[in-house]
Image (cartoon, rainbow, N blue to C red; front, top):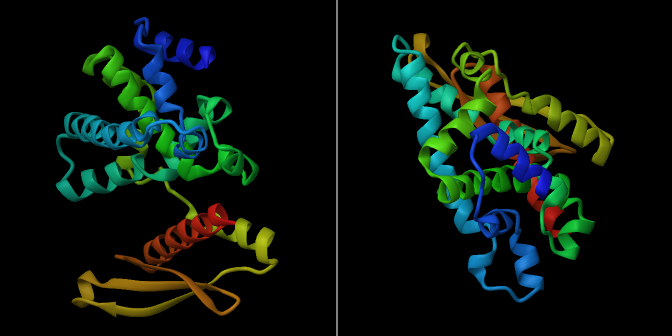
Length: 235
């Protein structure tokens, strides 16, 4: 944990005095439950706050950096930047997973590397930095990590390839490839919305919509990944 704190302090140029709030941000609910800690000691409340802080800082930065971009482009870029995949990757870069406090069951089921847990912990750390050092510090922290991602996101170059990720997972878990199908479409011909489903071994695992068939399939893959992750966490 000391290495993580030093990384954060180096980015924000300020010493973190409240170490307890960082520990709080790294405490998964499974650890709190197993050790009979009060609910407030898990990172869920910090995650809630961090999600809002992160969304605000990203939105403000996109708004300032790209004054000619319409609302739709800004919203799409914000959604990509705040996605589970991007946040979990940043969490891995900071090695947050290495210092998480996890319950034994969560540890054994691979929770230390699970994207949802890592993304949630990242948001909790955002809140901890804000509470410990203030808004200027947390803006510096966020913008430092996202610096090279803003332009890629607005130009739609920061693609979240959930289809590739799902394919790798289903090959490993079921030894088969996922199958996609466009099951519906609606709207005028110049502005169609497509509905896609993805199935594995005949079972529909995800459904998504988008302005292109590829986007709809990506959304379906995202839902399938979330479902499979939830199922794994229960086993």
